[in-house]
Length: 112
Image 1 (spheres, helix red, strand yellow):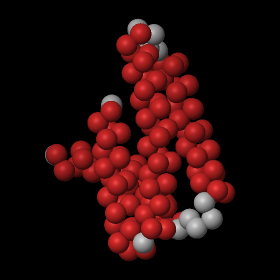
Image 2 (cartoon, one colour):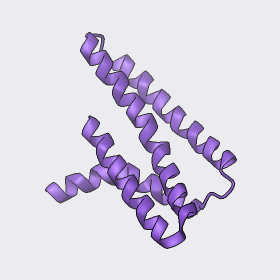
Image 3 (cartoon, helix red, strand yellow):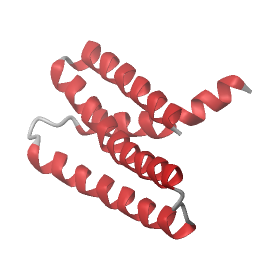
Image 4 (tube, helix red, strand yellow):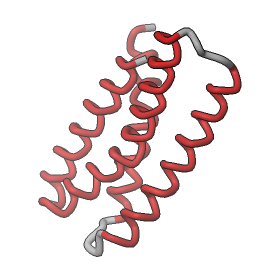
């Protein structure tokens, strides 16, 4: 569960590095924010599932409620970044989100 978060962090860092080479600091910040919009809610969801499993109160309801809050937090962070960061480079921001979302698929495909 936490290895997926690690892969997303690594993919976000790589996207930010490439964006920095391409567009400078504005691109790196945009890609980093794009990855953070995905990684942070996923981390909170993974932590809540881990705590529930350790305490023995894991349930399907808890999973779906956690998933609902993860999606809500992702949308809220997306809105906050869009409104708060005026120098946002949208293409790089969306690329950072995409890379973070697809990082785990890439790991699975390279191991197959």
